[in-house]
Length: 158
Image (tube, rainbow, N blue to C red; front, side, top):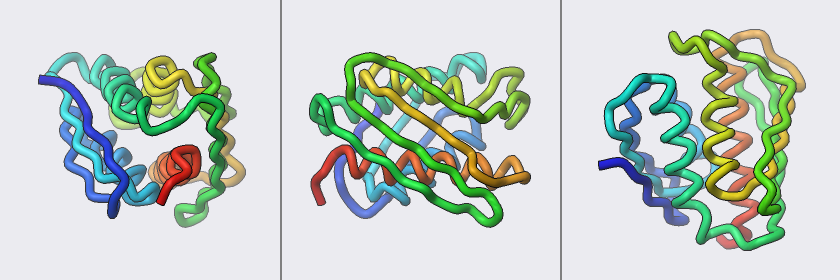
């Protein structure tokens, strides 16, 4: 069974996507955004699992983020620094200056595929900017942490 459940909380994540690097990154998103999150994806091709994970998270977040809500964050992870801005616009879009093709053994950009699934289902406009960073792991961590903080701000409740 695939699906996700998200509540406001302490940042505890139980994630099983079949893609270990993605499990870790979604855990970072939950921790930074203080979301208690459970996400499980049916086994499939790894690249399909990434998009499915984004879509499942988008579906779980949809009731928490009101139409027109905004959030943004700039977050470091070691030498990497990323900014993410979120709007629940109803017009799904991902605009990014980051190309991480081949990360985690995938032939596609893991972050872009996940973000596209999230944006499509939740009706989000997402802008992702890498301001600094060389190490791919740190870049991904900064992006997902910034996404968590920006989503929490868009929820607008503590």
